[in-house]
Image (cartoon, rainbow, N blue to C red):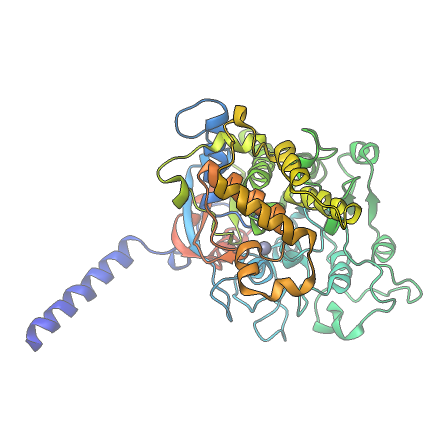
Length: 508
Ligand SMILES: [Zn+2]
C-alpha cells in the first residue's frame, strides 16, 4: 500500500519535472539574448478579459452577417499567453494593485500605486527604467491621466485616491508625453502635502516648487510642460515637441474621454489619435516606450452595459491598429503587447434565459451609454416627482435600447415588463438607504435601477450574462508581436509582464 503510494508520488514528481522543463514559465526562461526593442507599445485594456474582446468580435461578426466572429486587431497578434492577477491582500484585484504589478513586476495591496504592499517603499516602474535607458516615454489613457492604471507607471502613492499628489508625481516624472483624459483634482486642498511628495521617498529629482503655486497643472507648466486641450492645438503638435500634456477637448464625468457610443459616431480626438500623435512626438533615434490604456471598458462593464463596453473595446482596438501600422514599417525594432489588468463584471457569453441562443446584433439598437441614460432618468425624476408614469420610462428604453420594438426583434415579455416596472418605481423613489438592502444591491449594484435593468435585459436578449458589478479573478489574456514577443507566451503571472520587459531592455 505504502509502496504503491510512493510510486504514484514518484510518477507525479517526475511528471511535474517534465512539464516544468517543457513549459518553462517566462520568468524562469534563460536571460534574453536578443536585441532590445527600440519601440515598445504597452496596451492595457482596463477590465478587458477574454469575454470583453470575444464579445466585441462576436458583435462585429453578427452585425456584418458573418458566421462566428470578426477578428479584432488585438486578437490577431501571433503570440498569446495568459496570466493570473491576484493582489497581496485580495484574490480579486483592483486597477491600482494590478497596474502596479503590470508596471513594476511586484505584487502589492489593493489601492496602492507604485509602492510595496506595506505602502512604505516606492517601486521603480518599467517606464522609469525605460527612461533611464534613454527611451522617450508616453502615457496615454481614455480616462483621467491621474487614474490608477496610468498613475501606476509614474506615481508612487499609498492610495490611488490621492489624485492631487499623483498629479504632482506626473510632472515630476519628466516623461515626454501624457495624453487623453484630464486631471481629477489639480487644485488639491490648497497646500502641498510634503509627507506624501515623491522626493520624500527618495524618488525623482527634488524640484523646487514655487510654494505660492499649488495647482498641479500650473506646477507642471513651471516644470516645463505644455498643455493642449483643443483639436487645433492637438493637430499643431509636431515632431520634436517635448513635455506635452494633451487633454481631450470635451471631457465626460471623471475627467475621462466621453464614451464612444455617446459621440454620434465621431470623437474629437480618439484614443487612436492620441496614440498616433504619441508616435509622431516620441519617435527619435533612441526609441520610445508608450503605455496606452483603454480605461472605460472597465467602467461600462461595472455597469453591465455590454453595448457601451463593446464600443470601448473597438476604440481600444483602433489604437492597437495604429501601433500595428507602425510595426509594419519597423518590424525588426518594435514590440507591441496588449494586456489587461483584470476582468470586470463576470461577462459571460451565454445566459440561462436565452438557453443556447446568441443574438449579439441586437446590441446595435442601444444608442446611449448607461451613464447618459441614467442622467435622463435622473432628469425625468426631478421633473416628475409626483406624477411619474411607467409609460414614459418604457418610451425611453424603446428610444435608447430598442426594448419593446418588435420590428427590431426586441419585444418585451411580461416578465421583462414587470422587472422594468419594479425598477422604474425604485428609480423614481431612489434614496441612498436603498443601496444598503442586499436584494437591491444584487439587482442593481450602486447604479440607477431602471438603467441597470434595461442594460441587463438587452444583454440577456443578446445572450450575455453578468455575475458581478465588480471585478473578477478570471485569468487575463496577453497578446504580442515583434521583438521579444516570445517571452509573453504561456501561462504565468501579471508580475512576469514587466519582469520580461525589463529583461528585454536591461542590457541596452
Ligand atoms: Zn474597475
